[in-house]
Image (cartoon, rainbow, N blue to C red; front, side):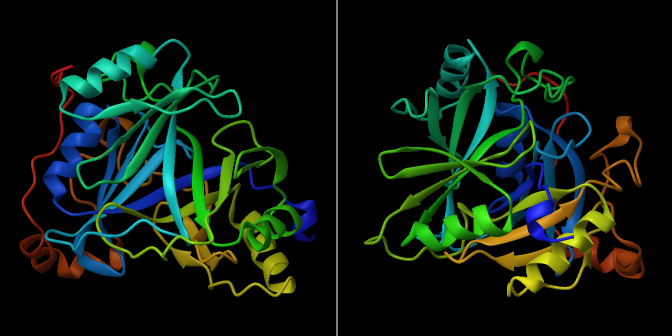
Length: 322
């Protein structure tokens, strides 16, 4: 099986960097209405939290994750990065979100219509660039049903990610020739591609040849992960990418999925992550995000890890100010 015969159904998760853990958690749960579906640690740096925020059960395509490093230096958005991530919202909900964000002290603006999309642009407390795009995204992805946002207006997972690149052509070739994406259209300097799936499948490339390179830090996206159905599907992708000359990591166990990583030609880190085993591996659906979960190899160090982590208040479903 080669990459031309494989399918990446869409986005699995997106990961970003934050600074203050409590501020980050409060914004995404109490303002945007995402559910904390897993509270764990960065497996490569267990003195740091790893937050997973998503719909009710952590459906692939709804999962936004954060590494919150207290007092992290501010990042710089530039070329070679995911510059913007867009959530899908139901049609007719833009005014609700405009009011909700404004009443929670968030500066929000409408972005110019592109590819027929309309929506809102804003930043999170660390400056991460976010958008809300009215979409026909499947209604079953209804957000956190016990959270502060009314189900009729809840985020419907991801709409798209936007990459800023010095040169879009090499990235375009990888998307089309190696990863199976389909070119959709061009709007100004923005090229749109779609994965073959039905949900969370859009990636936009924007060529900015004079843009300075981005720098990792708070308020910057770290990587985007694409979905694999299972371990065999992921291994087939790994073999196909290696055959195409792409440098790919070995499979890494992330407890709730397995991962491989590689860089696309513009310098953005891509991951392919398996759908299973999922976030109910060690918690029931009702318990998701209720306690610190560690992989087995860190359990002997639990006491030291808990002492090193900042104290945080876990979110509840209590309604936040609209």
